[in-house]
Length: 216
Image 1 (cartoon, rainbow, N blue to C red):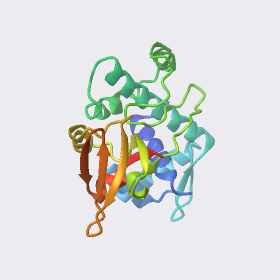
Image 2 (tube, rainbow, N blue to C red):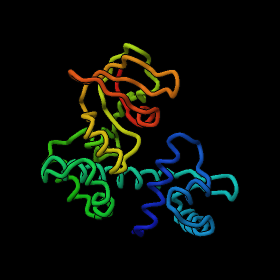
Image 3 (cartoon, rainbow, N blue to C red):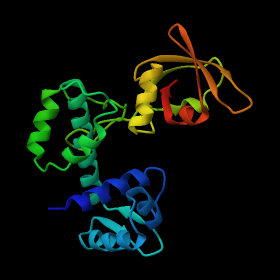
C-alpha cells in the first residue's frame, strides 16, 4: 500500500514526464510546492519500492509498476470529476479539489462499478481521456487555439489550465467543451485572437489561446 504523498508524487512524475523523457527534482519541487531536499527524500523511498528509476542529478522516470499506479490514480480522479459534474450537477470549475481527495480511495471494485454506472465515459468534463480498467485510453489529437491560423475551424475539446479562475472565464465567454469556433483574426500587436462563436465575436489573449485546446 502506498501513502497519499507517494501517490501524488507518482501522478506528478507521470504528468511531467509526458513531455520529457525524465523529470528533474526541481520540476517536482515546483509542481508540488515543496523543497528539493524533500523531493529527493521521497524519490529515494519510491526507488526502494521499485516504482521509479532514479539516479541523482539525472532525473527520474516511472517503472512499469509506478506508471500503472499513476494511471490508476488519474483514472479515479477523472471518473470522480465526471460523476460530480454529470450526476451531482457540480460545475467543471468546482470538481478538481474534490476529485484530488477522492482519487485516493483504494477500492478498485468501487471505481469499476462507478465506471459501469456512468456508462464507461471516455473523457472527463475538461476533455481529458479517462483510462479504462486496464489503463488504456485514447487521447484526442488536440491543438492549442494559438497554433491555428485565420479561417480555421475547430471544436473545443480540452484545456491545459484546470484552475477555477480559467474555467470560470471560459464559462463566462461561452468557450466550453463541444463548442465550435472559427479564428477570424490574429492581432499583430499582441497576438491575441478573434474568434467566431455561434453568432458572436470574442477576442481572447494569447495566454488563453495557449491554454484552450481544439480538434481541427
